[in-house]
Length: 152
Image 1: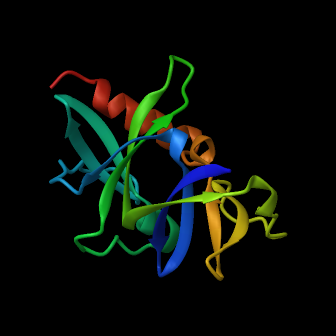
Image 2 (image 1 turned 180 degrees about the vertical axis):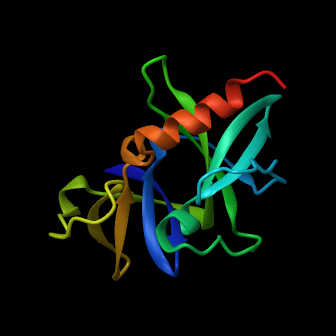
């Protein structure tokens, strides 16, 4: 059994493998990045360090995440050649975890966004896995991580 953080985009369930999650925090104020691509919510201050943040709802639907008490900043370990970086994800209703058997996951049979993985029936509804390593295309990865590395 694998532990997953469960959240929603547009009322549909999604999952992030818990071992990729560094922290789940209340959504803080974010510093905007003028001229940033769509889906980039800004930069968060985490333990004195800047962390780039994307809004998963905006990336998937073109609509920013709803401002709810259950909307969270999920810090994930994003794999990178230089060792791995923290990436912030704005996620709605990111307040629960679930254990699921890997054998229950199946392909959707539809090629959609490269960061969307297999689906599983979770509590009567389908939930889709988010593949962290495929979340950022190379050009966006370069923009986000270069932006937080520049001196202030």
